Image (cartoon, rainbow, N blue to C red; front, side, top):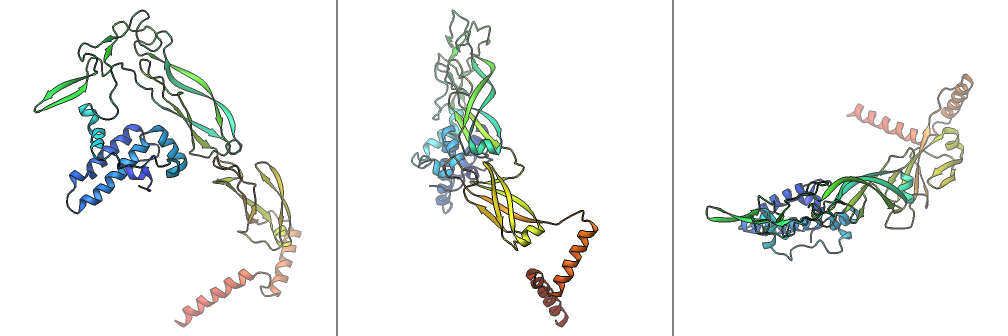
Length: 377
């Protein structure tokens, strides 16, 4: 359906947190819901409502969001299409926290929740990003307590069903005409309480640790790419499954090259003699050195393309090109003899009336025409 950038649709930055994402989604869903827009505005509101819903369904799902961040709409394979769910389910999303509904389903009677996803920023050199590598990272996280195996209860005891909510994790509260369902104040929605907590984790079922992981970086990754390590996030509460770890790639600035997708770009300063008479230069690449033939009379701004000497992407094994931008270097710290040689060259070139400087002649002709127009206007 929608081909707009999902982050733009929801009015958020690409590094938005889950909480801020949901907040923005709720605000826009309420604003554009067809039941709140009548008359001529109804059709336009319905389209915007579906667009907002589609964007949220993708970005609120960690796996879909990772695919979208890396490949855009093409990475979803149709999974981002919204509209089939209609309008009723979005109100479950909007009001679920208040009335206890929604597709999240609450914590459940067991109190076991999936652990949080984590993000690790990894900085790579351009060489490693293009060629691929394996790196070890150390990640601070919460892991399942080994003493109680994640239950939170002291060995030999177990969590008991909460008497307040009878294990449901939610209670109903009468407020005027409404009966509102909310998290149980005693067990905080878990459905169970621990009367004899584990001495190691103090009833949390998790402890803070740092773990070392080996991460395989595929060839061709670029800044902004994410690598998902399933189950390497925080351990879940009370024996719940672990979240995922997302390794966010950053690429260090290179001293010679800048990257443009699969192409590499570099500036090549060349002395005035070589560009005038022609010659050869030795050019560095990521895989070694190559010889570049410079034709006589090469001008500033000329771009030499070296096929297959660029980078590659994670989507293709074919390397891009190396684009060498010529920059003519003005000589400095000249000796008296060198200055005399240049003055002699200038005199001989002036005698030929710009035969050797066609751009200068064209520029001077344009300047003369401008002043003539001013004089006779």
